[in-house]
Each structure stands twice: as structure tokens, then as C-alpha cells.
Length: 93
Image (cartoon, rainbow, N blue to C red):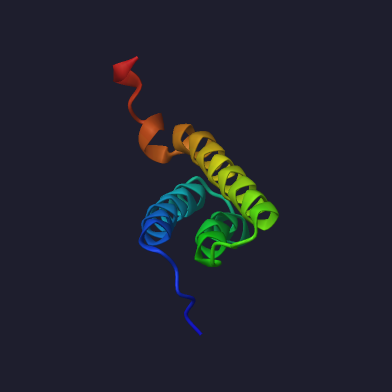
């Protein structure tokens, strides 16, 4: 049941999972609903999928991975300034 994935894909899965968990936590702490904060967890599911061997499918797989990582980083960039921790630090500005 567990797919056989190469070592580089395991590292990408680990980094993607950490990014997804941090983004999901930031979204949840900024007041988003539980369903909205779970959207970030699609990245590890995509990276868990085995890397295809055919060139065209491999191209689409890489496009989806880069798109998912970009969306994940954008969600994190939008959620970070809205954290309650940042609102109490007015003395820094």
C-alpha cells in the first residue's frame, strides 16, 4: 500500500509536510475555519504520489508540485501578517 518513492522525493515530502503544517496552523490561528485551514494539507498528499516515469506525466507532476508549493507559500505569506502575535508589537514600528 505504501508506494516506493526515491530518497529525494522523501525529502520533498518531509519539507512539504512541514510547510503544510505551519501554514495550516497559521491559518487556524488567524481565525479561519477548520475546513479552510485543512486546505494547506493537500501538498503532502501530492508529494506522496509516486513520481511518474513517462516524460509527459512527469512534466505535469512537476508542474503540479511547483504550483502546490507556490500556493502553499502564498497562503503562508497572507496568513503571517494576520497572526495575533504581530498585532501586539506596535513598538517595533
